[in-house]
Length: 118
Image (cartoon, rainbow, N blue to C red; front, side, top):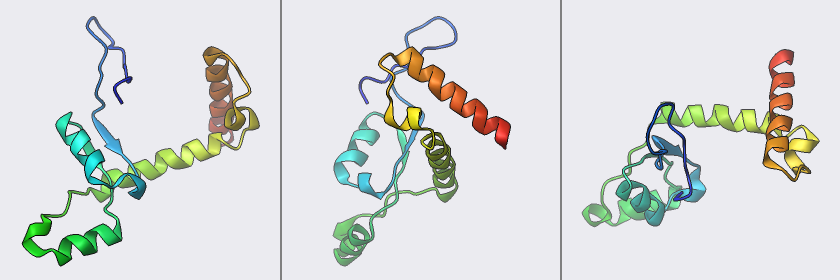
């Protein structure tokens, strides 16, 4: 995440932190949550069921459950479905293009075709 650079519309340095991060249960661990908290990044990561059971079993020493916003997590699902639609195009999923700008053009054409068909 240190390599993220989002250019600003006006003058100024590029942004290096996203507003928020949404991830699936695979990223539900202390290290990831601590890292995001330290950088001041809001996150929506569902807790694994075994982690929840262990936390409850420990009682007060287990701490409180991590915050989870279901509405923001639903938006993540929308993005996942859009990416899966793009992956239906062979050139996008296999990335035969060597140059980034050619790959971006391939994604743009695939997204335009998807948009026109809906």
